[in-house]
Length: 82
Image 1 (cartoon, rainbow, N blue to C red):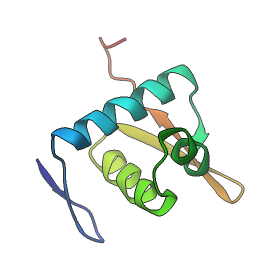
Image 2 (cartoon, rainbow, N blue to C red; image 1 turned 90 degrees about the horizontal axis):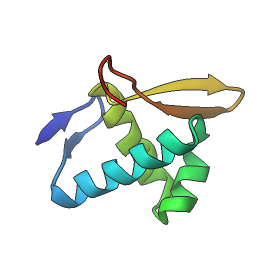
Image 3 (cartoon, rainbow, N blue to C red; image 1 turned 120 degrees about the vertical axis):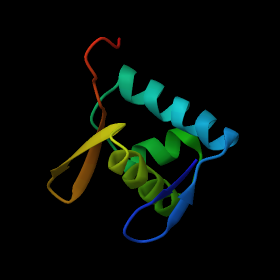
């Protein structure tokens, strides 16, 4: 799947789906995590993850909220999903 945000084209491959699943699981267990904390847990570059999370948010899979200088992320809850 290819998604275009306002900065660049982002392609989602099978390995990307694995990363997405890991992100969703982390946010399910502990909602409201900042990019720095997620990047540390996933062992990925913070700048990369920031763009990846933005793309997921643009797709409607995540929500973010600005708290001071940090942007924290939450799993988007859709009706009928756990």
